[in-house]
Amino acid sequence: MLLHTSKNAAKSAIDTDSPDIPIHQVVTDHTCECSNDEYGNDKYSADAHKTNCCHDKMGSEGVIIIGAGMAGSRFAIELARAQQQSIQAKNERLDNLHLKSPDIPLPITLIGKEPQVGYNRIMLSPVLSGDAAFEDTYLYDKADYEALGITVLAGLSVDTIDTEQQCIELGNGQVLRYAKLVIATGSTARVIPFPNHTAKGVHVFRDVADVTALTEYARQGKTGLVIGGGVLGLEAACAMAMQGASMTVIHVDDYVLNRQLDLPAAQLLQAELSRRGVGLEVSAKTEAIAINDRDEVCGLVLESGRILPADFIVMAVGVIPNTSLAKDSGLDVNRGIVVDNCMHTSCPHVYAIGECVELDGELFGMIAPVNQQVDTLVTVLKEAVISSSVIAADNTKSLQTHWKPFVSKPLSLKLKVSGVAAYSAGQIAFDDGDAETIETLVYRQPTLNHYHCLYLKNNRLVGAVLYGDVNDGSFYSQLITDNVDVSGIKDHLIFGSAYCDLDVLAMSNISTDSTSDDVDMTELVEEAS
Image: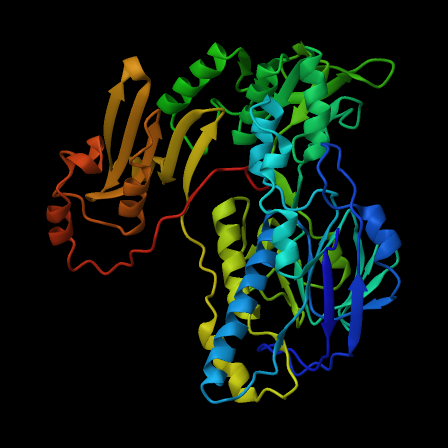
C-alpha cells in the first residue's frame, strides 16, 4: 500500500514561538507494504516500515505527530484538510491578481506505537461484548490518510526527541527531522500496586490486546473480578458477562458511578446490573491479589478478610498521562505535559494534545475537550508552510488573530453503560453548608425505570441527573452553562423543554450577561488519574 509520497523543496515554517527555520531540501518516495492485523484487517505494519521506510537516515521536515490514537489521528486528518483549504483559498485570491502562491503545506507524518492506527477506544466495550467488530472502530480509512498525503508509520515507538536539533529517533533507528512536533501520547491504564499485582491473570482494559485476552477468558466461562465501579469498569463487566464470564464489580465507594450519579440513579443502575448477571461488592477495599503456586490469580483478598475467588482480575481505576518521553526531552511536566491554551509546550516548535497534557492544573480524560484541543492546534498550525519567500514578522503576528485558544468547559456526561442511558451535568454533590441552599426537583416513573433530579440554587439550575430518559440532557446542560434564571418555568422544568414556555424563559433572561456556546456532550471513557 502506498502510504505517502512527498517531494518538497523547503524554506521556512512560522508561528509566534518559531523564528524562520531553514529546512533542507529532501526528496522522499516511500512505498510501504502493509500486512493484516490480528483481526484480519489490512492495516499498517511496523515490519513493512522497518524494511521499506528506512533507506534515508534523515527524513524530510514537516509536522510530526507522536501518537496515532484518537487525538493524534484526528489531528493529522483535520490539519491536512485545513492546510489544503488554506492553500486553496490563498491561490484563489492570488489568481485574481494573476499571481501564484509559492506555499506548500508542511508534510504530515503520523507515528503510532500500536499496529492499529486511529481506532475509537470507546468502541472497545461493544467489541468485547461481541456487539461490534473491531474493524468498525477505525475513525478513518487508509484511503483518507492517503488522499490527504499523510505518512503513517505504525507499530513504531519514538525513543528520543532532540529539541535542539529538532529531530526524533524511532525504535528502528530511523531519524526524522521536524519543523513542528505534536506529542499525542495519550495515557496508560492505572494499575494499583496491590501485593501480587503482576501475577498472571491481572489485566487492564485499554487496547486491542486487552480485548483479545479478556474475550478468551469470557468465552471459556471463567470467573472474573473488575476493580473499579466507574464507566469503564461497568462496561468491561457487562461485556464479559454477555460473552459468558461470571463477573463481579468491586467498588470502594458506597455506590457505582458515585462521581456522576446520585444515589437513586445509581440504585436503578445497580438493579439493572444484577438483572444482567453482574455481581457487585460496594464499600469494598482490596488488600491483596491471591495467587496459586504457579503465580496465577486465584482470588482477591478484601480488607475485611473475605477472599473472592477469581480466574482473572481487571483493573479499571483510571488512567495516567504518558509523559516519560516529554520529560526525558526536557519539557515541563507536572502530572501531564504542561501546555498553554494554544497547546504550546515549554519548548519552541513542540506542542501537545490529548490525555497526556495538563493545562492550568487540569487533566483531560474525555473526548470533548480533546477534540477541542485538536481544533485549537489546527488553527495554530494550519498556516505553517514551506515557502519560497520569507514571511515578514508582522505577517506572523497576524496569524495569531486566527488562533482559537482552548477553553476548558464544564462537561455534560452522557453515560451509556451497555445500553443503559444516564446523564449527568453540573454539580450534584454539595457540602453541608451548600446543601441548605439547594432546591431539588424530582420526577420518577417506576414502571419505566425513569428518574430525573434537578438541583437549583437561587432559581438557577446548577446540576442535573437523568436516568432512563436522557433526551432533555442538552437542554438542562445549556441552562447550567448559561446560568439562566429559571424562575419563570420552574413549575414545569422537571418535565423537560417540551413543557416549558421558552419565550417566557427568553424574556426573563434577556439582560443576562452570558455566552451561549454549544454544550459539549461526551461519553465518559474513564476517570483520569
